[in-house]
Length: 502
Image (cartoon, rainbow, N blue to C red; front, side, top):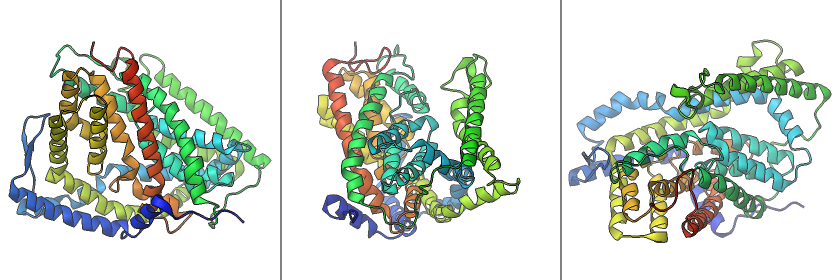
């Protein structure tokens, strides 16, 4: 008799409470209606804030006013069609769907994880997920889906793998063993804010690199503990109808996998040819890699790879017999996203309406001002900034947008207290990552719910949040401990970057 899924305790209460909420589509309709009423009330009250970046006074825009209603009518379709995550999800789903439909992913998973113990599988999923930000948001779609398949193939609950991948790619999004696009985006904002105090400050994208390398290793270890000691026992034995194929790969499938591997090698060599030379095709201006077509085009590069690798495998094993099978497989992969597409329509309206009201900016500015007035220093300052960033993340999920608002406040405040701008950026990045998988308005929450419903049809918002909460709490605790160690020994955050000002 296998272990039954545990439904008690705090996590069970969170799951039950979350799953009593209405369907996400209806929930967002309620939230959007509430936003409209709130914007009207606050607009009439004259609520405002001074944007620290521009110096302009930002007021609440009333959605229910004539201008607001006209804006809704004129932008409703644009909000939907311009919703950036939608295009990414659809494109990646088609590419991965082809690789899955051809049998490539299934064969690869069965070959790759044969005989691998659970702790090694968990560590692999978490380490790859935490470092997935090198592929930007594409990792949020790819890694949880593959992790679910991998866990299922070794007889573990697939949702445990899915949640591990989702938590790693989100709560650990800011950590990486490499310099990523996030580093390139944030450091310039930090430098501008630091020059408000010291015009001679110059920074690089590597200012948090050492700290984030250690973070990858620490979060992986902690994530394995959470997965193996909390999530896997809680889920118990998987009894769903979606079963893993436990047979071994045939000789033809091994040949297909080998051919796909040869293609992968050729593809990687072509990328290196375009990237390694100083004047390579995928290099940016002045030979830059961080600000280059390679970084900005990484998602399309992955899409092309999955499609072509799937075709190579499918043609070898016979799952793709003619060119017409390719679009059929890609179209079939989108069938599971119909509910997501409908949900995106209302999510896109809410997010754009929230931006229109200016409430995100006003909340962020007033909250950070309040923190500054309290006069926290040392560890209380660190914890206060992290918690404030977490709270604001529930209403503004864009990490870059928040930093544009916070940096002109946090960076000078830290510098005046004797801390470096590099340290202020680290603290912000921790808070920005922790709450990602817990935020109901997060654009990728609906897609991971859809993934989970493949295995358990009753999965809802409460299920996902209750399962990712232990990861977020554990990551928060160890990250704060890591910050304390860095402060105690004034360890370098990156090349030429320290905790305290020289």
